[in-house]
Every structure is written in C-alpha cells, then in structure tokens.
Image (cartoon, rainbow, N blue to C red; front, side, top):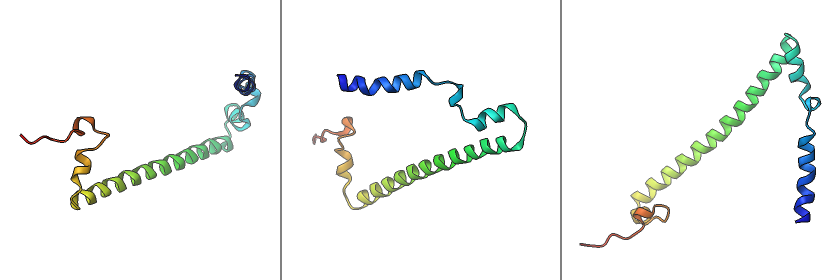
Length: 99
C-alpha cells in the first residue's frame, strides 16, 4: 500500500500544481497576435494528428480486410464448422441436434 501511495502522491501533486505557466508558448502567442506563424503552427498540429489518425485507420482497415479474407478462405476450404461452433457466439455454440 505504501508503494502505491508513494507512486501516486507525486503524480497528484504535479497535476494539482498545473498552471498557465506550463502552457505551450506558441499557443499563448497565437492568442495574443494575428501573425501567420502561430496559425501555421496550429495547422501543423492538425496535420500531425491527421497523420496519426490515418495510420491507425489504415491499420484497422487492413486487419479487418485480412480477417475477412481468412474467413472466406476457411469457408472455401470446408471449415465452416469453425464458425458454426464459435465460442464468441454463444447462441451458435451448441451443436445442432438432428431431429
């Protein structure tokens, strides 16, 4: 318990001490002037965020596509029973009894 307390206490004190002095100097400058440099800085931040978002979206789409192709390949090879008895689909997990 003491170890957790010793870890959390500095973090809480650091966050509690946050003030405007810690703010980004360019952001503060952008709010005070109408020059082009601070606006360009803000636009560059948007481009950086867009790049990261595009990267994560692309990886997500790639994983979805690979999963879909793998499922189609398994279906074509005759492994449909894997999906019929899947553990992640409880309503389909029970084997169908012949009647």
